[in-house]
Amino acid sequence: MAKEDTELRDRIVVSPEIMVGKPVIRGTRIPVELVLKRLANDLDPETLLRSYPRLTREDVKACLAYAHALVEGEEVFPSSA
Image 1 (cartoon, helix red, strand yellow):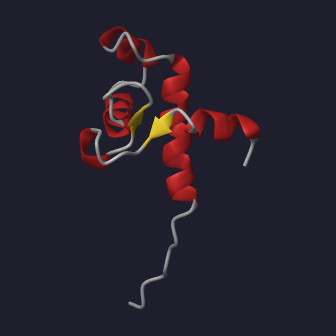
Image 2 (cartoon, rainbow, N blue to C red):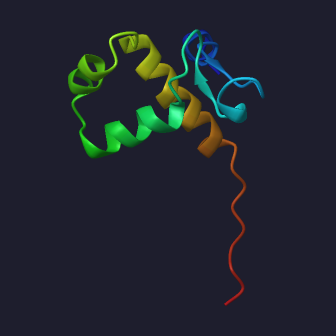
C-alpha cells in the first residue's frame, strides 16, 4: 500500500460514538457512504464540495481509497452452479 493511500485512509475514522460506528471523515459527521453515493449520482466533486463546505478534495480521495481498500480485500468465491 502506498504511503499516500495510508495517509488518505487516516482521514477516515470508525467509532461507535460517531454515527453508530459508520466510517466518517475525521472531525466531521459526514459518512463515507454519503460521499460515495453523491459521487455515484454526480461525478463532479465540485458539486459535492459546494454542498459540504467542511469537505476537502483530500477527504473525497480518502473516501475513494477507503472503498478501494474494502473491495481489494474482499474474498470472492465462485458459485457452484
